[in-house]
Length: 280
Image 1 (cartoon, helix red, strand yellow):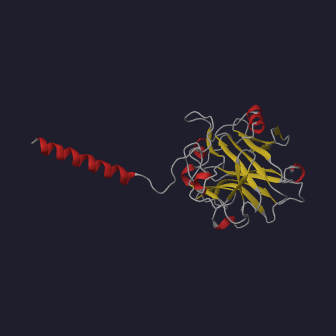
Image 2: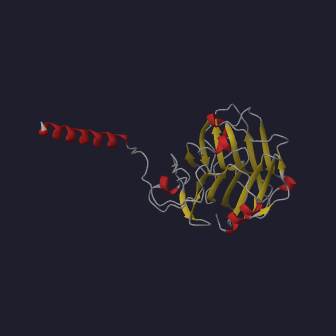
Image 3: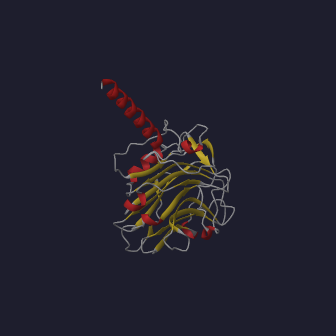
């Protein structure tokens, strides 16, 4: 009887080992020492990709540190960034994620923060720095996108953020013409932060820690109210593989992006200044 119980215990342990092994996810790289940021559980920072990986695994090099969210595709090369490494556009592809955690569903107010290094105006129509592809029925197939648009010269950066709410009502926050931004396409690193405050329905653009005086309004819209259930993918350094995005293009060859952050809150001026000063 004792032998029978012993055999039963051994059989149980063997079966349990096989079950655990079969449940492991083997289609993603193991966790490594990727950059992390101070952010409490459920905190305002919803997505953070430092692009600091130096491994031979391109997916590990572009991991989102908030929830160990690995991209499904990262064909871009690494290069020295403002802090550690960055990703460099190739003009044809982009880093693709399933989403940006709960950013879309929680971002009534929000902040988009990153460092960019680009040399001159886009060579085509537009150069996307991010896009939330969506099945919401909007003509561009997106719930939010950001781009450098065609300017008049290499010192006139046209910046645009398009937001589309759950009712497919959109708003273009844009700095163009007389409000175009100068001095940020000189092949040097510059910090950009787009801060939307739902209480005022106003977006403020910060360049290298300083607020641009030309704020942009969404009327009296209030909370962004985007539909997370319609998000099909989240792309950095390019536009999505969807037909209606043919008028834009991916982040061009040789231009770089670093320290990409999405907050579900409107950062204060001192918060943005801190990101800039600390090269975050």
